[in-house]
Image (cartoon, rainbow over all chains, first blue to last red; front, top):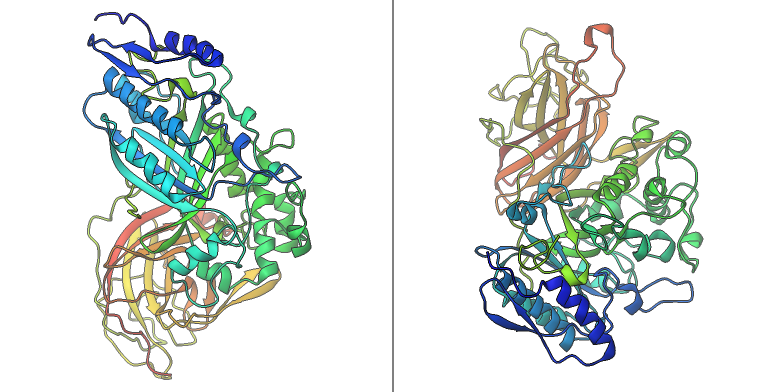
Length: 399
Length: 217
């Protein structure tokens, strides 16, 4: 096999220096097939970590970031055999998007992830495991597309532009699409589209369908916390994507506001606590088993907080709500250093230590589990930006 | 644009049961018999005595309720290992869920069609099994999910111990139920040590005729 004149990694390292000095015209990448194809330069100032979105997001005085309003997950399988030319074209499409649309919610944010089936295809060990069910009561479809691309923007039209560019890159075939939104008032708009029964809808200003906001600073892992620190995939992060159906009729009909607060956060939390501005509501520190004993229920945030390390969450949630076949869903996108971190957080949410106590089981009276049904799960590796297209492909991305 | 395509290459979590024992959705009622000569299913409703006998398939006689109370329809029966599962439906029902020392009311919604009920029983003795976590996903003839969530543990004087919830099915046709039940946590005598220890997962079909189940009341 002919050795390419430059490996892609060496080119990019050189390019980074040149870009910083502001004098790049174009980069030639010579693939194994001998053809030279012009790869546009990487836009300036982009962070190496694909998940580094926070710097572009508006923040309030507590450091809470406002998530982009509209999100789309595109899943792809391989179209034919992978090759350097296809990798180059995908990378060119991504760079074109970054050149033409600003990096941030006014333009578009992207994160490209690759699943176990991609690494199997290469014949190399997958850095992320295949998905498995994570609770005894769930029946998820276990999905394994070759790649997923998470797009986010404050404008749906930007997502459309990005999607068209990505679909035109050969080598990947679009096989799945999930849309959704998160933001003040958007949940009510989505609820109206879902034609939910009377009395079953989130408050007018709620960003999410269950009526609470999500993602305040202290409830999220930091972007720097979730990067792989060593090994061949240093600088990557992992991504877990699940689709979760929401039983909103029961959530709004059988509970009052105080009940919902208790289930979302924990016993003793009040509406005043929830509405108080700040970097995040600290969940009750009482152990879930003790709350079960005393109150007959536990809170979701209370349970999930059991997975914190040094007081910090270990996953970064970029979830959003949507609709699938007329049903309300949350597309739960989570970024973390290792899929094991996600599994640990889900295990905390299962709250096994409280199950069997005073009427709490795996689902009933157990946080918000009673109103969630996991429809699918998938795992991906999100490489650094310089390796985001066909990572590990021989002749293109050296491990 | 909205094309909610599913992600590709999914592996279904559970396999359908070899032969779905479909029942017709004809309205059936059972007379509650004090005599135990006839082994009737766990789906007897409307009488003061809970049945504790072995479950059977749904092929029995139909009789009106002597006291005129609501009847029910058997949807399917299944036995997996040492657990027998029966699914049935009756009119939407107001019920209460235990939360610690309190009971929280669940009222049926105007668009609820049925009170969906599952019984878990020991396949050998027919005794009811409490303290399991039961969830079900019901998909309708149009492929849309009609219900996806827990069945709550409860008892009723006519029905005995079961797991239930009010559900809006809507249109008539063939439905699929994907069912999960965790092992019951209830204490037991030594003769049942280690029994009912597997989480049960299966899927079965049933027909729904689109009409409410019970007699007018």
